[in-house]
Image (tube, rainbow, N blue to C red; front, side, top):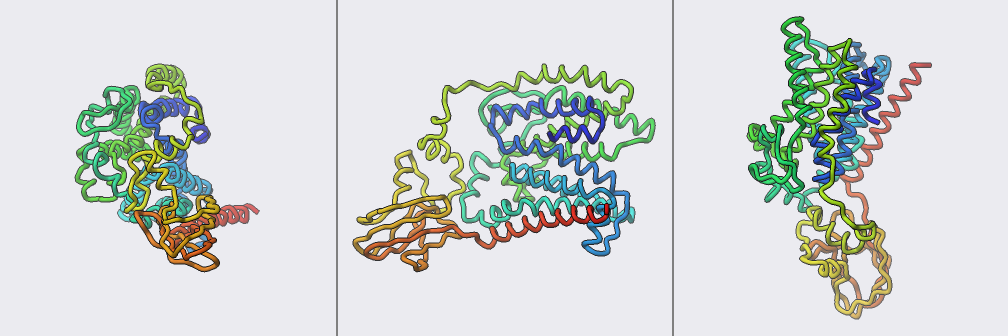
Length: 467
């Protein structure tokens, strides 16, 4: 669907399908599907073409001046330029990338931010109005605003979890840089990333994609020398692609050391996602240059690309399992949960076997009678009977926002090994524990709603101008 919209923009289906084939049949795409099983990153890949389309359309329409007198006047002036749909598309696609895969969103924001900063310096040096920069910045802020209900609490409350563990040990970024020759050819495997050249997975971006991209670079410089022509859009795509390759290699180690939040990306080769996208777009400019024969080239190359790279789109093996095998209590509470325990509280003691997961889901106390204990995920209702006053440990991860009410009274919560502790009195204790929004969660929700409201104001302003 994303590529259909790009096709509509370029108005040449053969060239667009050619570029989409290069993108979809990139070996890195097969790596995400069949080796890593990286569903989040795979979904983020679908939003990248829409993101680029928004950038491209805004750049075309940026030559029309804006009034900039008031906030509302700014919206109306942008409507007159017809750029407001593309600002919204840019914001929605950026938010889609963040919500699909936060690490891809982090990388996109980094590249996007560099584009905005470069535009600011360019417009300052040439004393231009900040039309394009303003539109891009608005798209960036709206995208962040739309997705703030997700990333704002995640960032502000991450210190309550063990997420810092993911940037050390086997996930330390300095051990996972890519060698340049691995981008051209490296053994295809179904294992993981390892230090040096001991990787059990491939980092190829596709020989066809690389060759066609190099040809496009040669053609671009040829046109620059002979005809003094050079596409600004091509320069942006080429710069972003080269920057992504640079960040994936050890040459960028000093940047990783300086910009400490980059450590949460874990694997520098994640930047290859954006390089693979660039290697799909760059050859498209080559076909556009051949105005008379580009359709023939596209029709000739598309089946060759599919035939050559389809060999990577195969699973290692087929598992003889059904949905019950994958959703059983053992599969969910032990096999699946052990891969994401970094989101548990800092002092939470990890179970060492499946039996311990069952023990940790039990209420801990002396001679506690359980009449009922109902769990809806964010609310626990219970009735317990105690023989004496005591501190009872509940199988609830201790995070900010939990509040307990026992026999109609608010009770302060304690913590034991990352689980909630509630003081209960002798006799019947009827109550509930409810998860409420903390300030960062509530703020994120409000910002997201306001961002949707701004988009609504855009739409209303456009309708007003049309009438």
